[in-house]
Image (cartoon, rainbow over all chains, first blue to last red; front, side):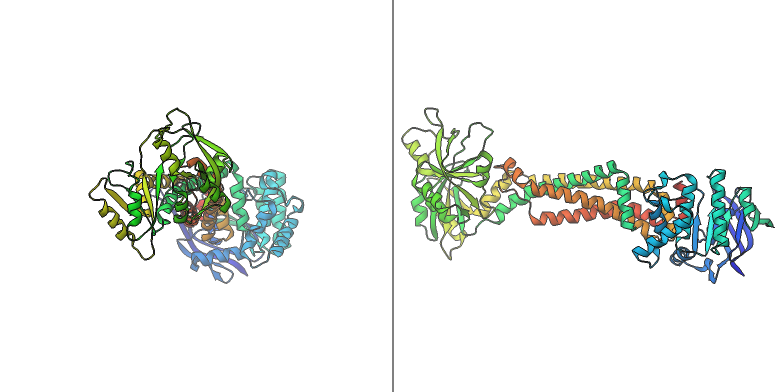
Length: 227
Length: 389
């Protein structure tokens, strides 16, 4: 059953008076628990798809449904609240807050939940255990390697137990060894924890790890490959 | 983990900037308290003056002495309970820079007229009984180390001794004042000691008295008695000008010209400058934290949270700086009372000044954080992450 469904989605950016079609009447479905990779050249619309699904950006036309919710109908406040409960983000540049420790970074999204202080800490510690960084809880981002930073970012993304993980070039800034660890972790989150993972990547190895790959070009799905 | 901790970490992440900003606010709030206190302290002397006292001076000038023969006539006027002579001595203690007020007066009458002057009974009696005796305010005593039993030499400027020597006054007591209209930086001595010296030729200077301090009898209005005194001397030999104590005090404040307005303008300019400083600091901080705010939005924090963080940070700067500035203003009152001496003898920071200080801190905090808060509320998560990269 499709947990994410995009129908006729278009997105046009205007810059310097020129219109750039990023997504052109895109249809796409993602099954629950699926590990999907989006690949394609720069400007093909991969990251825009993630931003639209996660509600960080608005489609110009078309509908986006995630579970029972039509995301395109939510106003900003509802969208923000919905995102906090259902979406976990992993960015290429990790995007950890430098003044907070690993544990505090992971605990941050839990401030949006009704959990108490002790429960938040427990859940954040558990998330760090899952990504194998229980011994780095009190380290600040600059005290961690790139791979460790990305694993902390993944722990933060899963801390509030969202159903969907949106990963934008998660291995883009990592060496091969660290990238493999992150890919293995994402796969485990999909297979073992049932998360729906959508990953934007240029990394062929990352594409091979995914269950399905959508190849995009000029805002449309050119073809799909399945593992 | 809490958003408050995030604010503290952000403040602590640039300690030099934080210290400078907090320090600037502290200096501004201290200056505000200090300048406003000068004005309010001068005003307090006027506000706390007694409506039961009037002062008679020469109609020509305050610096023109009145004949002491007026005393008996004034005391005989209906509505006058008592009158005392009060002469500005203008002596110098050791060096010209050691300037403080000295007045020759009638001690027994003065102490009845001014119940707000408080001194131990035995010290008061000792003063009454010694023609060369004097009392000093607690502020003066602390500044120069005067105490009962000391002999204070003063070089006469208006009333020099003919042999060039110093006048000697025996300190018998240290007084405190219960109201701002009487300061604690003054020395009072026997007017007859001065007059006798002029009479027997051991000192030179104008005879008479600077003013008469008059206490009204019950149920008499100051205006009526003032009019009666001035009418009595309307034909000379020297015309008088009698006014309430408050008006007399106000004349002294007015001698300073537009000082209150001038001080107010300086204070306002400093506060506006500091406000710009805080806005500048917060704007720099906001630019640096663009990505952090994007992260918070991407994580699902409502749009008002980043705004709130900036406001909390700006208010933290203002509150910490304000607390330090006002704390310094509070703890240095004694020091400034001593430094300002005769100019603002009853310098004190009034409670209303601290209330205004708190209001200013809140305004600095809110206005300082408002610009980045407003920008943050309109910031798009994707845009913030891109621009902050």
